[in-house]
Amino acid sequence: MNDFSADVRLAQQGSSEAFSRLYATVYKDMYHIALYSLRNSHDASDAVSDTVLDAFCTIKKLKNPESFRGWIMKILSAKIKRMQRNYFEVPGELKEDTSISEFDFESVELRESIDKLDTGSRLLLSMSVLGGYSSEEISKICDIKASTVRARLSGIKKALRLQLTPDVS
Image (cartoon, rainbow, N blue to C red; front, side):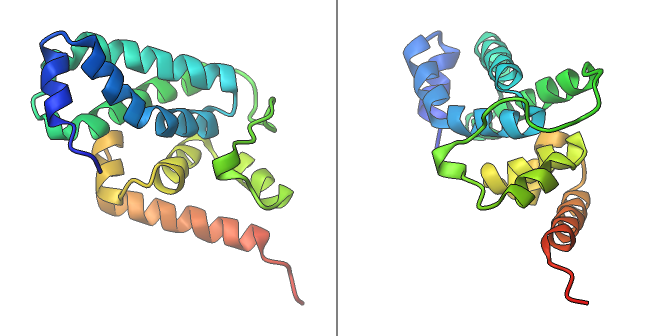
C-alpha cells in the first residue's frame, strides 16, 4: 500500500492537484469493485464519481492521512450498498460488456457463477480478489468483524469451487 500522507495533507489544505494524485492511485480499484458489485458500467461510474465528490468535499475530516485508501473505499462501499438497495429488478446477467484486460475471466462458467452471488458476496469477493484488500481492511470498510469477512469469503469461494468443479460421479 502507498503512503498517502503528504498528498492528503496538501489536499486537506485545498490542493486539487494533490487530490488528483490521490485519486489516480485508487480509481482503477474503485471502478473494478463498483463494476463487479453493481454489474453495470454506468452505475459503477456513478458510484465512483459520487464517492470522489464526497471524498473531495470531506477530506478535511480525515484524521489519519495514512488511512486514505480505506477511507475512500468505505465511502465507495456505502455508495454501492445504497445503489443496490435501490435496484428493483432481480439480479441477472451482466447487461453490458465488462471485459477488462487486467481481469479477464477464463471461463463463461466462472462469470455465470459470480453473477449468481448475492450483492454483498460480490462486494466482498471483488474487494478481496480485485482490490487485494485483507480481511482486516474489508472489515473496517464494511463495518463487519474481520472473522466474519474471512468466514464469508471462505464460504463464497467454497460455493464457487463446488459450482465450477465438474461432477465426476
